Amino acid sequence: MPSAATPPYDFDLFVIGGGSGGVRAARMAAGTGARVAIAESYRYGGTCVIRGCVPKKLLSYAAHFHEDFEDAAGFGWEVGPRRFDWAKLIANKDREIDRLEGIYQKLLDNAGVKRHHGHARLLDAHRVEVGDKVFSAETMLIATGGTPSFPLGHGWEHAISSNEAFHLDALPERVVIYGGGYIAVEFAGIFNGLGSQVTQIYRGPQILRGFDDDVRDTLAAELVKKGIDLVVETTIDSIEKAEQGLVLHLFDGGRLDCDLLMAATGRKPNVENLGLDAAGVELNDRGAIKVDALSCTSQPNIYALGDVTDRINLTPVAIEEAMAFVDTVYRGRERAMDHSDVPSAVFSHPPVSTVGLTETQARGKVGDIDVYRSTFRPLKHTLTGRDEKTMMKMIVERASQRVIGIHVVGLDAPEIVQGMAVAIKAGATKQQFDATVGIHPTAAEELVTLREPLPDPAREAAE
Ligand code: NDP
Image 1 (cartoon, rainbow, N blue to C red):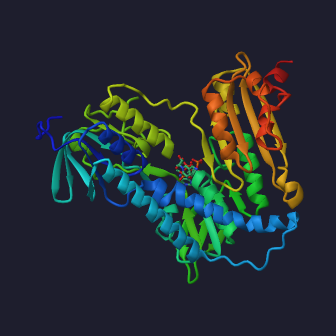
Image 2 (cartoon, rainbow, N blue to C red; image 1 turned 135 degrees about the vertical axis):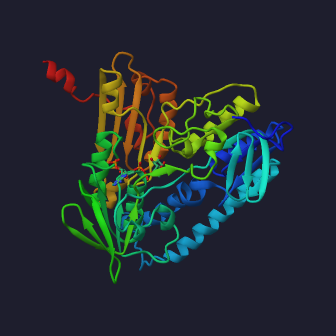
Image 3 (cartoon, rainbow, N blue to C red; image 1 turned 90 degrees about the horizontal axis):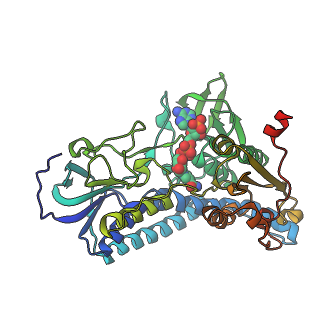
């Protein structure tokens, strides 16, 4: 793709998008002495900081107090009258997000990155337009993230996405969450814990498709125990605005009234109006920017990373892709990010965390495996009386005895699995887990004391 701009360029690197990946790449590249600029059309911090991971987890903490107050009674505490103030929570959350955004801006400024406010559009491979200004750069990096996608059909303009959920004027009484993925189960837990009456509608037979089946079944049972009305194998056909709230018409002819409908039906890469055609940047068949292992696009001087490439859409992955990009382009150490065994968590109530292969994936990929599973009531709930279970599962490759998957549903699951992910990354075997002394009394010790594998259905079938 010929460019109208020739060296010397205004910048060595121009980053489009000030989210987790873009900011990290800009700062680190500037730290090597490169002349770097960044354009952001909204707020620094991107999805994670402004309307994703961080505010979501703050709301999730808020929702948990509901049970914490109840659970306190079992430990002898008498808690007086309780009142929840949505406006106060949102104001406090907004203050924290403002503070974090300020830190992101300061980090960029301190690194010497030139910030430009506005939508950036590539004019060709080396020129980018932001508002009425045009800049040239030797290397371009696209890190524009993703945006919620809504189902097709009548009336979806009355629904909100998670973006708006962070700014509602008041806590709605009757909430319907549509979808069965990360965002759906997280917000079902948030609204339920804060006191809304929640119905979650999912089109498939079980929520969290792609997760281990025992995780899916365990979490679904826990959501129902907490009072969420989980409706599966149902779709919303159309939505009507009523005098009070919304009327949802379901596929089976049923009707549901609610005050708020939130679509959590996936996200799509932000690729619109970026000038990708003009710059010679191709998309893949999922509508994401096509990149190679080094995050290079079909145009050799243009890179892309994070959700806009739709590889693994998680903040720490975008950050690691950014670090690999900076190593490759600015530190002379060509390095592809290793996307294997990336741990992740779903901040549902109770949370889920997982690393490595599911049982189904392992049977398909490695063949003979041993599966260990333990389900128990956490010590805390022996006094609270709460009927909430923890489920832990370990997948072991039989021939090598390597642990290739760990899946936990229950209190502190993400905090437990982060450490386990190091062991998996290091290739630890079941025997090394067994040789590790537990920390007592914890839930995590269960993972170093799993004794008997489950009966193997493949072996039983052969007998
Ligand atoms: P997910 O892809 O996780 O889930 C989307 C859900 O919507 C699925 O249950 C899907 O069903 C359903 N769905 C999709 N299209 C339709 C449709 N047209 N009609 C009905 N249902 C539909 O997306 P999310 O929006 O929950 O999250 C996006 C991504 O953001 C996640 O995949 C994750 O990478 C990231 N994320 C990570 C978090 C974390 O780390 N804790 C938290 C939040 C988001 P089906 O399964 O049948 O396809």
